[in-house]
Length: 249
Length: 331
Ligand SMILES: Nc1ncnc2c1ncn2[C@@H]1O[C@H](COP(=O)(O)OP(=O)(O)O)[C@@H](O)[C@H]1O
Ligand SMILES: [Mg+2]
Image (cartoon, rainbow over all chains, first blue to last red; front, side, top):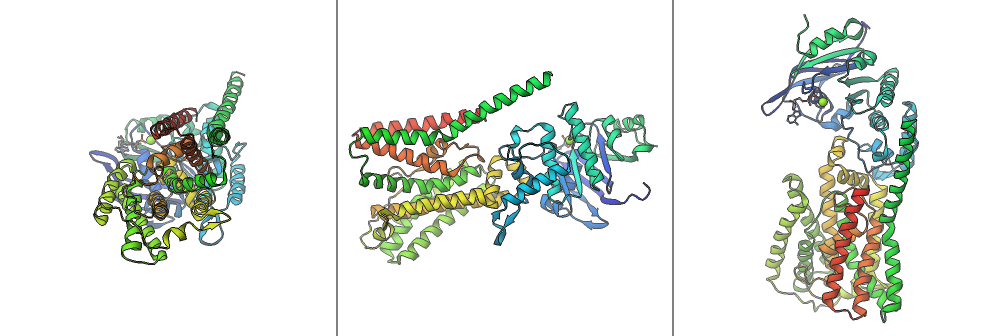
């Protein structure tokens, strides 16, 4: 593990919402091909941090380094171009559209000149392939998203991230609303992604889950990043203490 | 075991829900055919070639503006400025053709350009001003009506110069060009909405603006385009109406009786669209427009007083609203 490479780095990232200082000069390293967990109490600033990384929010200060290159993110489209794809807490799926259209939303396959006409067949085929790759169980890809289970939705959202060439997949509390069985499904999905060499950023509340799946565990408290631990070197007690704001020695 | 039973129940109610939705969405086809057959028996002169062509002409005028209006609705934008665009474009057509003596093609191009300008204006207010379309277009409509009033001096401009009506109502296979134009608009709309990237983006933006934006859909551009399409079809309708009546039909109210925001709205709702955007098929609106036209035409032929026809139309809108609400509840 000593050879783990940093694929993405935030440098002194800062974000306030009016009087609320949600992210305070956070410098964070994300390791390639690993599951990088981000934990912390409610309101610690986790979602805000990953929204800065995925381009959904613009930072007030600070910068990014992706593959060693200093860069700006510049909106969701810019993030996609850098291989960063977020699976938002509410998944950002369009309920009244089917699985295929959701997976390709914003990056539709087209045919003919001018990229005007949709390649419905191509999208159908690739949607099947991608869902198979991640072992998703979705019987009908023409089903509207509103009729899918929580686990299936998660798979659709992850499928979308992969279709966009996502190398860094951000998942914000993917299991928060799921039952036991579907939670297990999502954890398997994360493991499958890791085996395929993807980098995963996983936000979670659930310490056991984090210890089960993560390679690195980072803790936020009141907008600050308190530290990052390798999973094998960390104890649950230590992480819990950090979550409650006790700075690591 | 328990979970399996629950799942089965969900699946069953899911199927029943799907059936109900199917009925609500496609009921308009059945109702339209029933109404047609009913009038064919009850209304004198209804089922004659002449009257059927008349129905198609009326439907074409309401239909074209509804097609564009539908696109705006799908993008989640309730465009209430239709009357304003109609007023500007009808005055522009009459002034340019009659007073300025412009050629027909130039007149048409400029009147359509006025429509595009009106749509862009709506887009600026909605997107840059971040104002809900329903409110924003109500305001812009006021501006447009004022401009039309100023340009026309408040007068109806009568067109005495030959060439406009004749050209716009040329018949192909016995059917006037306005009807062909309507079918062409719906074909184009259907292709755009179901076969193009823009169409996918329009549906997504209307259904869930936030999700679409986060997915990288250029939502603001999509809204601008939808509002331009809506205004453009209103302008096209205005040209046809002006040509048909040989005068500028000022301020919408006088326009062909049936071409207005309320008809478009009724048709959209009858067609199974959600007022909140993102749901619906444009071909159903064509049928809904035919339904409303047949309704008006048949009642008229049966010598039902205009007041009662208006009441019936009012009821059509009310039922359409109820249908739309029911649909949203089931879906
Ligand atoms: N869009 C926003 N506007 C105002 N305050 C916000 C916004 N988003 C988050 N916050 C605030 O920022 C802080 C961090 O929130 P968040 O990043 O969602 O935390 P977490 O995901 O760790 O629970 C909270 O106090 C929250 O209320
Ligand atoms: Mg959160």
